[in-house]
Length: 567
Image 1 (cartoon, rainbow, N blue to C red):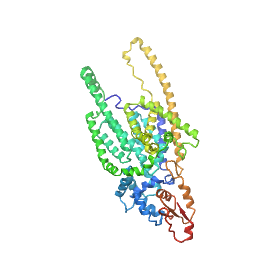
Image 2: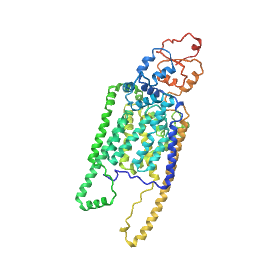
Image 3: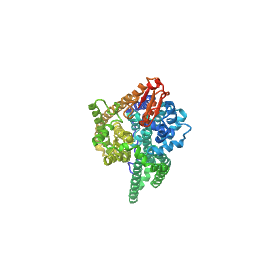
Image 4: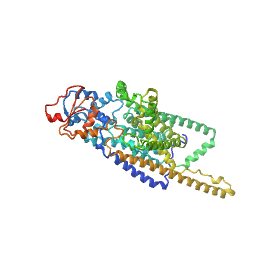
């Protein structure tokens, strides 16, 4: 294989050890943040749909049953349609996803149902499962960073960056699969790099299992998996050509072969990686196995393509190009800084644009570092992670209209890749350059003193340059972590944020309704938001769903009539 096949793990300088301890503590802070204030946030429409699926209902079934105009208490509504119960089984959960939401495969929902069956369906308990799933992202991002950049320090930087990322915190505290999806993207990429590096059969088994779970986490994973597979196929083919060239060189030069044999005798014994022909077999079998295991959901998706178009048709609505570009611009900063609940980064628009511009410059420099200073395999994998799905959505929006690429949760792999790319740049600054060895035995004795003097001067210059680079890296890392940590501190006590679209009115509306002793809510055609509202109301509050313009059947009780709300 070529010299770039394996990324060498750099030895960590003693000056960076204190940084490792600080990053480890920040990771611990990020873990605690994910489980804080879970029960105080609005349970918005998408989370309501998650609970519909866990309970085993499609939206059509909920509409059909509730539009009988029979009054029901909040407790009855939630026990029937927002919690698992005996009348609906796990098969109903899978069926409701296949029929109503095939773009959301059942991996997350199956285990969420089991979680609630064991621990209950309190609001904090529900979201604790999503927060627990998101914790996998921290070790997975650390592992893939070590494989990409060959440095344990890079792993700690990546772990701290995702731990204090406001973007990852928002989706870790939401009862959806996006936190788990980001974790599976990082884990699958990590295991693929490990399999390509070691070539062992168990490494490829791990890749196959992780790839299967990734596919069953979100339908967009098909694009990510395609990008990963292209990288693996290209790398194995390139390595095969390199080995063939090396073998032909050895055939023409017996002395080189003898020298290689001597080197192998002197070098310590290591378990050699599997031959490339075997690695091709392992790669093909493991990838094909994952595809076969995912085949049932592919069939279910093909049978319900019209459902995907219907439920996601809003993302195809035409928007001006300027609006699309502006959202791309703001989304660039959200994985690192997010202080404003309506999605403007900061309340001061000029300061917000300055923040985004600074992050854009850092991203550009990090991409330059990735392109010119990182190994080829690292570049390929990060480009596949960021481009295979993100580029597809951008092309779709520009060619057919829509704003799919402006919905940040759909671009979780792209923004995770940006964080890893910046991690690579910072770790490059923090690690000293490898100073090439000069064979002193080839220098003439008369010039040995001059050679040593020049080498000492060169080392001093390099050390001064290294100190400057470290100071720059410490400053950039501190700014990113302070921005992320302060953003998380702003997000935690807030009951809603920009990711919970249409939910800003829920808390104040609930406060108004709760002032009344016996509120009776009559609503039509707003079921997800009414269920969202129900999480902030007393369990005895009555809700009645009616068709538009239908008469309201309220008992002839003046107190009830005075406490009636029509929504």
